Length: 160
Image (cartoon, rainbow, N blue to C red; front, side, top):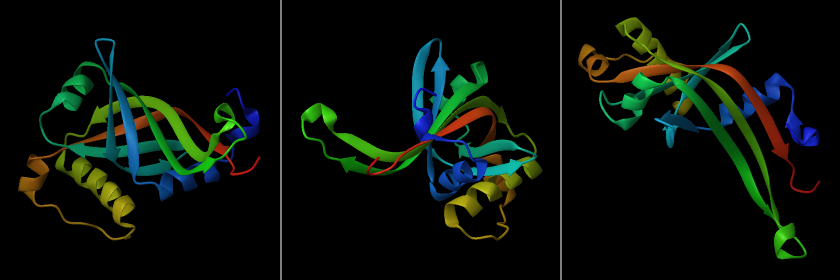
């Protein structure tokens, strides 16, 4: 990271950013053509491993790309506040962000899908409960996870 003074090194601070946000931008590559999509997510952090959970319909461009190339990167950001400058190019923005890379895997069993959907629902709703999903829902949805291989955090405060 070029600006070490803005790096968030503490894992707990990074997880706070992931926890307070609800949308992740997932970037994929389709034959060297970039493709990015905003997604709601759930996540787990166990044994020092960050894993995101997403869901989608059983067809579509995102799924087609993942089936050909499961390498991905992601970006989450928040707290954007304009910092005015004395001249146009000295304006800036206060923010917090998390960026990382990993591999996406489709979850195949009903148990895996339900677990992934529960993580997604718990994160999105903030409710610590177990959700029930009927078999028709499980059959009509694709649930996938991204096992994160590396990620960084960055923060610019309002006035540095």
